[in-house]
Every structure is written in structure tokens, then in C-alpha cells.
Image (cartoon, rainbow, N blue to C red; front, top):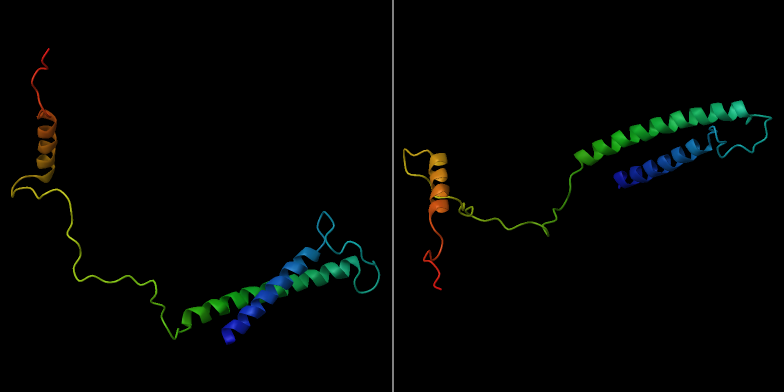
Length: 131
């Protein structure tokens, strides 16, 4: 319950941060380019306010991110979903591969000899074709 509430607050902070960043005047003008230059929200006052608001919201966003990460890591689940669990087997399947070499024979030499023997042996009927 607390985690869900903090997650919603985090989303609101993120939306406010995006809004404040977009309102700042850039080289192109920003969203606040058509305001009155007098009073509290003059160009300089708005820039100072938006800069401070951005710094505060960014700090809150980072703090909430760390807090949510800690809460998610320490959160205990009441149930475990076993719908995707694989059945366990008692013994691993036998490994298929080349037969082991005789004792005292280097396995690489035995494999090379088998390849050479397969290349040298004729395949199929070797009789000359009848004409």
C-alpha cells in the first residue's frame, strides 16, 4: 500500500519536473516566452524560480528513486507464481558426443585418426561403370 502510494507520488514528481524543464526559456523561447516583464514573474524572477524549482524537483526525484529501489529490494512477496516453473528431473540426460578414447591415447590424436580414416575409406561401390 505504501509502495503504491510512493510510486504515484514519484510519477507526479516526474511529470512536474518535465513541465518545469519545458517552461524554462531556451535559445528558442520556451513555453513562458509570452509573459509580462513586470512584477514577481519578470524574466529574471521567472528564470530564478524555474531554476530553483528544477533543482528541488530533481533532488526529490532522485531521493524517491533511491527510496523506491530500497523498498522494492526489501519487500517480501506473499506468494510465488509457479505457472512458468519448469519440472525438475532426477538425473541429467546423458551427454552425447564422441566415445572416449582408449586409455593412454591422446584424445586429439584419436579424433584426427578417425577423420583421416573416414577420408581415406572409399564410399559406396568403387567398381568401374560398365559400358
